[in-house]
Image 1 (tube, rainbow, N blue to C red):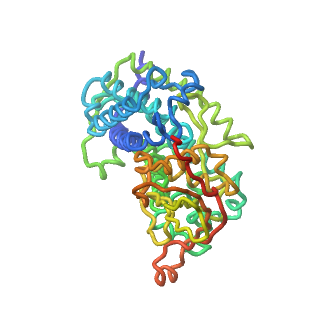
Image 2 (spheres, helix red, strand yellow; image 1 turned 180 degrees about the vertical axis):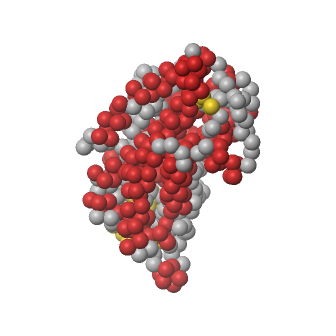
Image 3 (spheres, rainbow, N blue to C red; image 1 turned 90 degrees about the horizontal axis):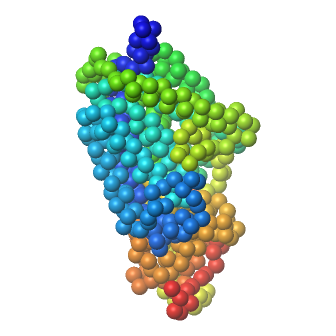
Amino acid sequence: MKAIDVLRQGLFGSEYWLARFAFQRGLALIYLVAFLVALNQFRPLLGERGLLPVPQFLQFVSFRRAPSIFHFYYSDNFFAAVSCAGILLSIIGLTSLSERGPLWVSIAVWSLTYALYLSIMNVGQTFYGFGWESMLLEAGFLAILLGPNRMAVPVPIIFLLRWMLFRVEFGAGLIKLRGDPCWRNLTCLQYHHETQPLPNALSSHFHHLPKSFHKLEVLGNFAAQLVVPWGLFLPQPVAGISGALIILTQMWLFISGNYSWLNLLTMLLAVPSFTNAQLRPILRMPAPGGLSAPVAYEWVIVAFSAVVMVLSYWPVHNMLSRRQIMNTSFNPYHLANTYGAFGSVTKARYEIAIEGTEEEAVRGQTKWKEYEFKAKPGNPRRRPTQIAPYHLRLDWLMWFAAMSPVYGYREHPWFIILIQKLLQNDPSTLKLLAGNPFPQGPKVIRARLYHYRFATAKERRETGQWWVRTPAGEYLPPVSIRPGAD
């Protein structure tokens, strides 16, 4: 019996009470952002008349392949209700109301939040094909069993969160080491700050740093992703130091670009590496001691931890493989995923400019007006903006579309539908953009490809431009809607 008591004390304790408290509040905040993004953007992207309508998608995918409550019923109003319910649950978690009651309340709140976001992601198609979506779901599932404030902290879940962070960082490091040669010759960051999906106002300054500094950045990146994560499994204070180093490197990434909630969530995953003593100077709140947990709950934690370790076979096998893939889920519930991004880095930036005209016939002197996106580079004089941790899904997909410049719209069916919606002057679609240059709607639309580079400090002083762009060809020839077409 004494051996069992010692084991139980090792599985549960109060040493990571502050880490659990901070992690739950931070995760609720990210959930809140994610559900707000869904509420604000789903109708033009995924709605019944969206670019990739959910009802059509559900006709070709089974519940087993993509679990979602929308298999049972879908309408735009119901999707909005699901998003609003997710927002409400996120606020309950953010204010700690979910953790002030009994265990079942905490489990219910986090389970419902996870289930609602899983339902959204599994019907989101290409607009939800980002690694941080699976990250949020995996972290959200682990949060279900973290327990409320008045219970001891399940140490196995703390280590499963560290294991997830290890996969995020180590997988990203491996994909770079095996990928683009520019990572191995330390030159990738001479391009990446300029060619990343959505640069912010500081990206230009990072890009113009000396080449020698960029090499140090790459070395620091490899150290942070291939060496530091191993310390997460070592005794304190090494685990805490490793977590702190990961947070610092993620803060560097956060201020240099827009990656939705990727950096914020990665920093949050590092919080369970800190003990109460390490967090108390920051949080300045007492952590109770002598907490316990129900015996049945303890056995559930043990069983769940065993299941996760079994599921971890696939991401481990992937990381060890020479054909490593990145940001992949091996099950439809997005548990024990594999991570890693930017194994290859684009060396030149191309952007698609969508232009319209109010003239019915296109001539040499036709006047074209350009649609402006909320964050994607467009007008060279517009300052890049900071939008993370918010996520502008259409802006990101436009970055991917520009990677296939020769009539690349054929690889992106949503792009043609986007053009059709703009020709129709669709109000819902126009809300995804920064503005509408055609109050009465355009007659003809075309898309042109431009090469972009950051203006130097001298060029910006002289011209006021953040970008210098040059024409790079046609992306979509002029198109219009036939009279009477819907």
